[in-house]
Length: 142
Image 1 (cartoon, rainbow, N blue to C red):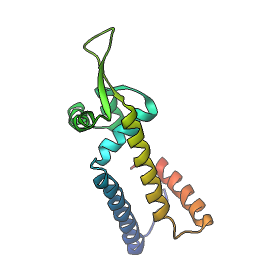
Image 2: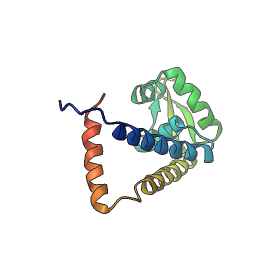
Image 3: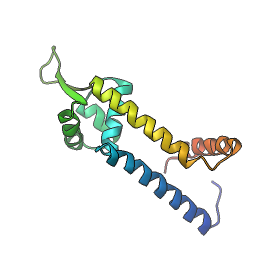
Image 4: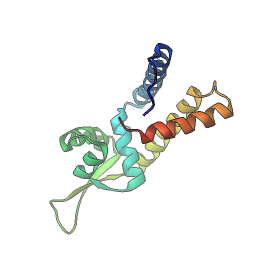
């Protein structure tokens, strides 16, 4: 592993970027009265179909009770519904509704716009290079 000398500029710049990105992402949630975790649940259900609470919890690396708490508001807002299995009534799956899909699409669009705005100061070459850096960093889990 490459030893990188301590670089306060790199550290400050990275922290500033993360703070800016996080603040912008939280604004999307506040504007839509939904948390980042609830956005993630909608996106998972939209992209992967219905899930049991335990499956969602595993995918998001949080407890099933946390999923239950997060999904209550989504259910009350009509974004998802609980469906019992016809084969085994004990099995409950969370299913995204059309309203939830539309809402998730809106959130993803706002997030993509935010990402575009954050990177708008970069040239096309810089964005390509940064994309490669992000991909490389994504492989290096801490």
